[in-house]
Image (cartoon, rainbow, N blue to C red):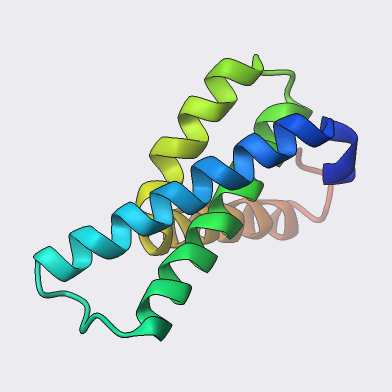
Length: 107
């Protein structure tokens, strides 16, 4: 399902919430001295949050989750984009390993 089928206003809501989370993650990183505070750090945090937000929105929308819950989970998951992407990657690796270890017949 392409992301544009979500409806433009929902897509913009997801993007806005994700960008807001990315900015919040950047500011938290500055406060904790985890980030140096450069422009690239800001862009990186926003980009990671956008990617995570779109992944979460796509998965939840394809499962038929209500959009209010989807927006809430986008906000939570994209708050720390790097950790969320690592968790998503681990889930994908486990799923693919299970699929290939079963000879391609597992769901």
